[in-house]
Length: 373
Image (cartoon, rainbow, N blue to C red):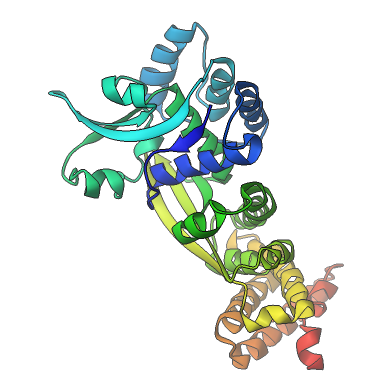
């Protein structure tokens, strides 16, 4: 069967998840998908550490009732439970489209195969309408003022939730609120580079690598931090090498934070991450490697301050040093580099006075290639 999306991409979470699913299926199984390969992919994603829970409404009305009744199994409230179910059912078509269907009771956005779009029905999940589709369904279909419910068939669900699992970075919990983080290519990169290039390389060698580094930062900090995430992305040496081999000047990502509040999900931030491979700083490979290493050290140290665990006070100065490094890189103003060195010196002295056995890490954060030049 052919895997294909019959609508152009937009910036909504819905579209991004579907296209992420499309890319993951094609990277694993190619454009013409064997059922066994799709099943293998679903099982593979089940084994990933994905901590995504459905809302109470989804559990009550969709998972436990409709799906459990139709397939005669008992399902839990996690994405992994749903993926296990999708791996056991037979999916014979993956040509997915969208359509607005207006009934007397409600306006529906249908996502699924051409036959499904003619009749409707299907399954509805809250996460599929987290951003109220401010793209294709609101503008193209003139539904800005309407309440819309999303319904998908099993094929639509499979592609969407493969995309969710594939783009998932990590999750955190703050004040009884679950926060989920997802990484996508931006539209320009998706259309001009990924869809026309080696999809497996773009997914596995580039985006997955970026995702792993972002996961480390979020789990250290307990949330997103613009400076730390940007630096770990634009100075990811492995990714930079892969991008340079692909001979592209620009690659962009989107880091989206979705929070589960009560029975709904809300998009709380949509952070652009842009890598301009042709920037002059990337010509100095030694400097790039140094900044990557320094960023890793400062992120670990600064996270203590961010999370209220800065017992000795060096984490505060590490936090400032990381910010000044970010400002130096983004402005090329050497005043910020001097400020970073001052904060490194302060952090080192505090750590040394408190007999921190790893205080020497701060001394290794000076950019020797800059000093030599």
